[in-house]
Image (tube, rainbow, N blue to C red):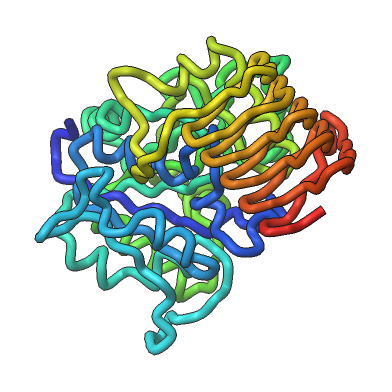
Length: 377
């Protein structure tokens, strides 16, 4: 549990553009993941495990799916008479009410909520990373360090796709104090570096002061416009996250992050017994496998009906794979249907996609084929 009362602020729309048309009808925060979850589930669960019950979800557009998923917050024990989880859409009537997509404006729009909170600290989180953060340790380490701001970062494995990222990189000294924020550093050649996880904690009053000042000066970002110029006058520290972490920054990275969970080592590192990931409950029958069904190295959610061949796939709830159909190296989202003798390979089929008999769809590992929600092929 956190030592001092802390409020959580989740920015749901910050990175929608990175997944292109996949976010056409939803925020990145509500993107389905790993067969039964949404990306925001990892944020909400992390906050709840730390004893944080004052949670605000800041949304700007395409948030109906997110509203349906979160509801009153019962699945995360956030359906409270006081505090709990609240969604904050744009308030057009306010002075700051605008749709400019930057972090400063997003937070400035909900300053009344932040001011009304009795919390001492605030933790800000985006939804573009898949990880299982120990928020208690992160916040408590920040308090013990005496830092003004603490930023969470990670060092990806050298053979990981994330190792090629050259943006939002922290360079810090031996004590963890950030000395530079850069986008042109080779982590393989420099030890004290880490990729930003877009997660930070600071005192609530400090956040209010920084956001008000940045908004008045029309500064859009926190890292580059607020923190970077103050590295010498403020104590801004980096904390390295050591667990499983994947950044969602494209359709390809979403595909690879999902498929990486077919490795039990990765799955066990993400879904920890001591910090389970909660999600919306959807009671359904167990998956049914026909007599001729063949399933190899796949993640199958409840409610699936499989008669055909499934290999190296992630199937969400209610997916149907008919006899003679084949799904290989693919992600089939909720209630998708693969009819008789249809074949897919390196395909991401969104919810309610129907692929008719005899169709053959093939993408590539580096360029998976995405099929829009409710499409009929």
